[in-house]
Amino acid sequence: MPEFAYSLPGLDRAAAQHGDAAAAADRASVALSRATLDGAAVGATPSAARFVAALEQSRGRRARDAAREAAERADLAGRIRAVSGAGAELAATTADIASSVTTPGAILGGMG
Image 1 (cartoon, rainbow, N blue to C red):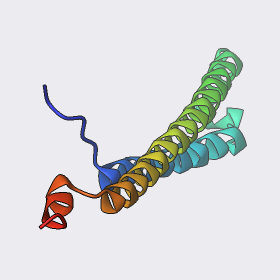
Image 2: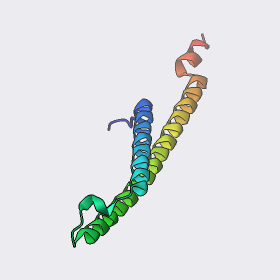
Image 3: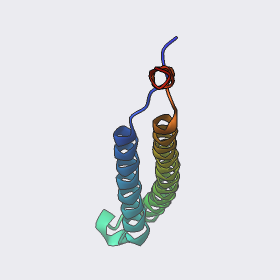
Image 4: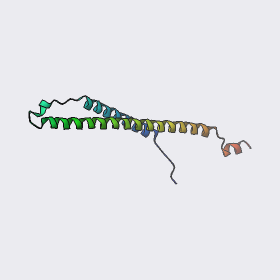
């Protein structure tokens, strides 16, 4: 049966990458939310107003999608950091316990 293994540096790297992705998605959400569309940009045609309305609706959806992605990535980064911290604490505690254990060889060596 294989031993359970994980990489603390790998977890830390993943948390940082998800944090970066969350920040990028947040910047995209803000940019999309602030963007305005001038109806004159599409011309003076009978369907221009409907076209602009459709673009605005799509822009709003993309802004909400980006905000949701930012929140999900930030949450994931936090959960990965928590796992990494717990793993580091477990490794330190295990090392402390292991260093305090008297081995059978030490016991037998002291009996001579």
